[in-house]
Image (cartoon, rainbow, N blue to C red; front, side):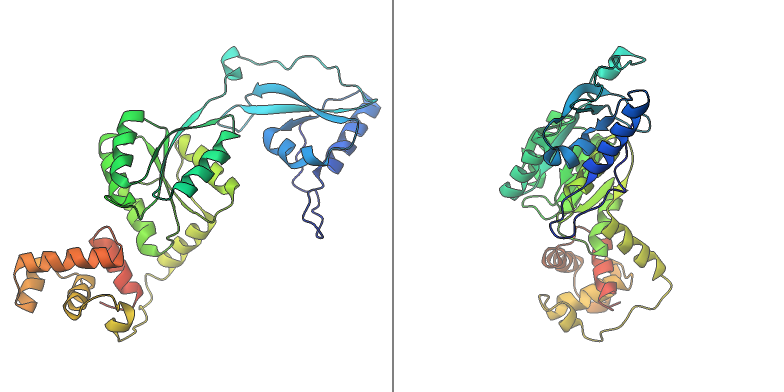
Length: 318
């Protein structure tokens, strides 16, 4: 019998989880009848193991392929002193299912402390292995090719090569590789630039560890995952497509880091004007237009023209 403890109460005073109460009741009810067996998943045992009273233990039963899960799961048997605990061995349809599928991870982030935090988190998990780390986008491209990870956790703002461009380059030669953007940026421009580059996941760095782990496992199994906060932004964006953008009427206030000429170029870009037309309107050379656009991308920390257009239109320009 498997027990789902999602309905168990939380103590509001200290935030502790009372899942053991549910498990104990189930075990006693079953033992009063035929001496039933209570099994816990790896996630369930993590919630209750610190609250187990004396005489109660969790016995590791190995890994088993469970229904509706894409990877084998560690299974634990609840044992209570004085109650039956000797049951027939769990049976598997195929011996290969006892092998834990390992998801190989490459972490690409220019902050060493963040990489170390993720590595420590994954070290405790039986189905995830960190095969490499990259401090910048260029190294991420090189290591992705050399190590062939299942999933790449990619920051966006990195030196040498940003995460959006690194994602494009990796997927150009290895289109089946799963890439998840793990970043502090949650603006529309960054989200949609990541999607256009081919990322299959987008999770904020402040997300709960469970959200990051769910994204990794989902992307490793071929799915696309965008965290709740990002999904909400996407819905709001598409809902607002037919609504006129609010006008600030002040490009200087919107982007004070740009020069006057760069702001003029940005407004024209947001209006859908081509580089050639910009050069003609402003009476400057094509090379000068390209230089202005490069400076705009750098100052706004965007990867391409589409991102710049989204940033400008979000600010009411164009």
